Length: 154
Image 1 (cartoon, rainbow, N blue to C red):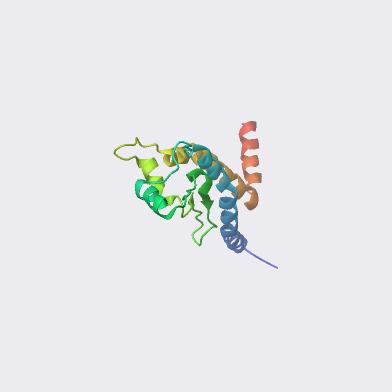
Image 2: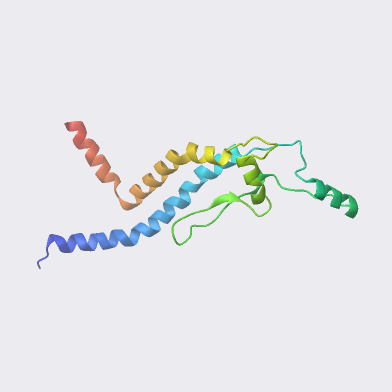
């Protein structure tokens, strides 16, 4: 039986390509809690306001009922991994429309860029976690350890 190196490389590259999509989705899914927890920590939480507006309070007075609104911190949601390998972490339908007021500010409110701050804080941790998961799943730790062993000998 004879074979060439090209045949083995081609087979291994095909096998690696088939595994990579599944593994990258797994890595993203396992690393998303890093961002979710940081977003939950950085989302402002105020207890002074009932989060209603003037027209809503008038309507409540007319109808005789009291409307309640969720805090943004309590409405953080995570989607599943989509076909492109992306996961959306954000706010649910009850609070998403209010987020830009806090993030960008208004005439009467200074901006509090908590989403931007969260992305900057978690970027390196997220990348480290996804890359370590992908390395371990693809069996690349052996290569990293081998390079480390070679560099230590030099």
